[in-house]
Length: 305
Image (cartoon, rainbow, N blue to C red):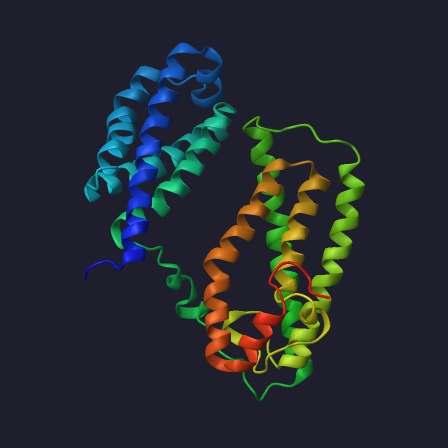
């Protein structure tokens, strides 16, 4: 099937990324051999000659060839980038070396993956996110409002415990183990506590409003049966997402971790560009003109008073 004009444009963007990656990779290798500081920060005690013997042809040259539209080269370059990122993360975790190299390679892995999708498909297959148990389905109409509210609060406890507790603490441990920590001002802790309390209050209010007024839960597999335009939803279309992102940033401030803050920001980008379009398409399909009017009247991120 021929790619659409938009798909062809994305394919060009994908090839352009691989060209930039090839140049950046070559510049990095030059810096590795010329600067002991760069070599230590990104490779630790690894032998740069041995690593370069594989990385230059598979990463640098592979990316350069992929820039000319060779799909096999794009697959090789993206796949090798992921392998190096995982291997380097294991090495850094064991030895406490090359932490900045891990972060660089994970960033390159994510970007290479997106560029690979552009080159192969002319798009990113975000629709795969809402397949199977994550597919959009209305909640059972037979459940009571109390049952929906209880299920919503239980979901929040699980999600908050994982995304705002377990995962941030794991990132802090890795940040310290990889020696990539940065200093924070002491006032960031009380500021983070204030933001966390306010954002959590917004999250609870939004969740209770959705489940009590919409006869459903925030989960895609049990979505509300009615469009909710009440409580925080009168001012912003996605108050739970706003609350969750603010909570993540607040936890990063409290823990003094730039990596946790980056995780919250990256999560917001993924939600905004991958999940939100799918969710809003489902809402428009189910609620039609009512949702379109709401979408036009109330902004996604910035409150409309």
